Amino acid sequence: MYEGLNDGRLESDHIVPYSAETIANYLSRIEQGERIMKPKLRNYLPSDLGLVGDFLVAHYQPGNRDGNWLRPTWDYMHSHPGLNESFFDRIGIWEESSGIVGVAHYEMELGEAFFEVHPDYTFLKEDMLIYAEQHLSTEEASGRKYLRAYIRDFDHEFEKYAESRGFVCSKKHARPISELVLPEVIPSVSIPNGFTLKSLADDNDLWKIHGVLWRGFNHEGDPPEEGIAWRKKMQSSSNFRKDLTIIIEAPSGVFACFCGMWYEGINRIAYVEPLATDPDFRRMGLAKAAVWAGIRRCKNLGAETIYVGSDQEFYKSMGFIKRFEARCWEKRITSDLFME
Image (cartoon, rainbow, N blue to C red; front, side, top):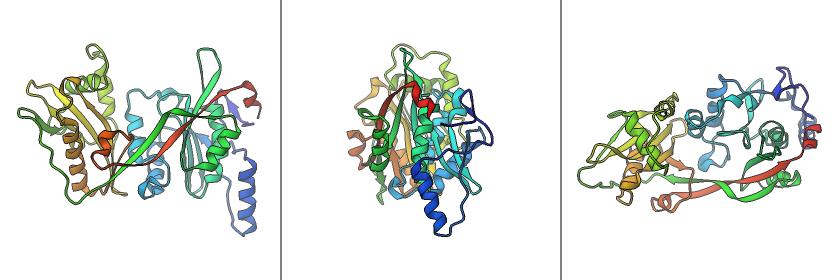
């Protein structure tokens, strides 16, 4: 059982309780003469935003073979208006004197769990899953707790362990990652006469942005006025760039299409998020034109690879290839879990 807990929070000097696999790994390393320190587990702090981002950058592998989130995905999460920040202290950070070696976190709300791990500390995953069950789960209307844990489809050992703890793989909710290795020449896609392609650096009209995102994600009715605050938050990340966020304006002056691009220069990667087209302007080639325009700008900065969290035919037609998906493993949690 995780000790030192106070209403779901960890004591500042809390030490990780280890699984048998973790202990065996440490003993093996000690026998080989390695001098090691046990990672400590603590709560996430607001100051960890950049530290976790740097951790993701440092351990990225080409093709996202590391299986961790991309730095742009982490940044986008923190600027998303749907993020519930009131549970940030439920996010677990594993660290040694050298820095962060693991993170167990949700994306928008409790009830979901994602795992970011240093390549030399993959043995911590068992402990991280147990932690997620205890601290990242949420209650259904019936009062019973549940958790959706997202595990990469190539991480068979972790999936096997999740299954041994009663998780069941769901065909729904999988999170695909697709990749585009940039060609030498970026295609130019024409748009209909009267439409204008530009960036938010040219025209950052929050009400028009709110309109295209509200309608582009198929919400009904008029955009609510309080949504302007949501759009401001979307631009709050220190890594958000107006010049990489593409919009296409219709002849009437409304924004017809919106494409966000996030660039990470150390690994020369970029990430598409979000992409939305107003239903009145679909099937006109606007989305493809906006994405290629954003890609071109990222390529000019040095990007070599573009990622998107989708495997839709739209992206496949542009040359994106699905690399893997994070499968959703679900579990209804009984109260005796908290006696471990």
